Amino acid sequence: MTKITVAKGDGIGPEIMDATLRILEAAGAQLDIDEIEVGEKVYLSGNTAGISKEAWETIRRNKIFLKAPITTPQGGGYKSLNVTTRKTLGLFANVRPCKSLHPYISTKHPNMDVVIVRENEEDLYAGIEHRQTDEVVQCLKLISRPGCEKIITYAFEYAKKFGRKKVTCFTKDNIMKQTDGLFHKVFDEIAANYPEIENEHWIIDIGAAKLADSPETFDVIVMPNLYGDVLSDVAAQITGSVGLAGSSNIGHDHAMFEAIHGSAPRRAGQNMANPSGLLQGAILMLQHIGQSDIAAKIQNAWLKTMEDGIHTYDVYDEKVSTQKVGTAEFADAVIANIGQFPNKLKRVELKNTGAIEIPKHTRKPRAEKVLQGVDVFVDWEGTNPDTIGEKMSKHMNTDVLELTMITNRGVKVWPNGFDETFCTDHWRCRFKAVEGKTATKEDIVKVLSKAIEAGVDTIKTENLYTFDGERGYSLGQGQ
Image 1 (tube, rainbow, N blue to C red):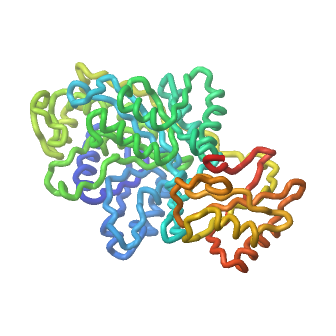
Image 2 (image 1 turned 90 degrees about the horizontal axis):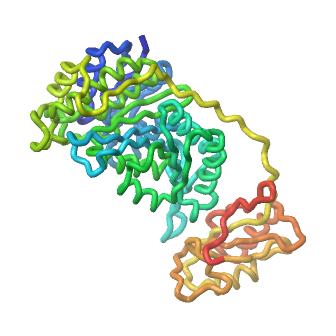
Image 3 (image 1 turned 90 degrees about the vertical axis):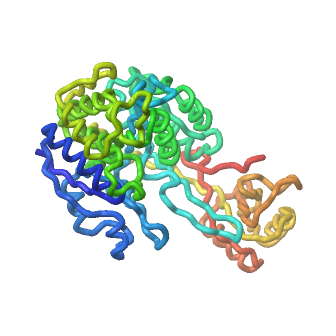
């Protein structure tokens, strides 16, 4: 018997959770359930996190969390409970299997069977944003080596455990050479430890196009957070419906399972919603906790139900469907099929897999870090880079640090910029150490003090370092 936490959520959540739990019970799942309340009611009670301290304690104690979709109220500073849960509990891997049910669910890709493994904790979803000038806001993209190692190792271990033949990495490291470059570098390092599994890397734009056009060429795809969020929905939709897909969120100590769709409040209380996405999440949960025999029994019953043409309104097609049913009736049909197998769709046989264990990160010896200079970001409403370049060179250079470059939105505009380049009021001004001299933090302070004296509005600084002699900062486009 496994203790789990259940949240019925908002909108259609209670209906699809009740249907899912009935199916799990009928199949003989060995579960001891603690129910908590999260979501809209908790938000509107004044709790901006959407979850109480007591609910957190239940989740942390039980470690396994089956969650229906929730509604986050608009405005008011409410935090996304999904993002909070994933990051707070260290659920670094989001896993979304996307498999076609051709010909029973309409799809242009009848042979598609792809698993998206998405990094879940960092990237642009760190949510660190600032408005820095009148015209420019920024969002920090954070990619860490531990984050890369965890998610990429998990992708290869997943492929190994489930007999997958290939792992593909998607990044945009031709442009983001430091952040996506690190993800790609770690992918190559870890891939070398799995010679029996084919590996490849695609630039995200052409990779996404290939996924949409020929998904059968992929097997397991591992990606940073934002790309994985977007393309896991694309992958689910091109199999036939986002509403049929479930996902798991896996950490070292905790795991959360859910549907990938939202709470659909317009359909709430009408006995219309399709419980398949949440049921698929529950099946992933059963595999994770070692009840794979029950998971296989439910999955085969679900496949037979889909094959029999017993469909809810969202996937009903009079060409292949035989009966349009509601949420409860769909659950009844799955329960009636427990112990049976599909005739044409491939029956599922699951080994008692249990959780995929990967080593916790061990910090490596630190690289030698040497200060090279500083990027000073400036708010200046002028438009001629030569004007600000001359002013800063004259008033802000020191005997150690001198202005070498100004960029605007990443494009070099001084010295020798082009008149055609459009400039905002947000300028990155690079000060590098003079040949033969070594920069210190005190030298950076001198530059900033001179900026105050000159009336230059500095809004941010980024120190420039090398790590074991390797440059740890980007160059400007055009340099």
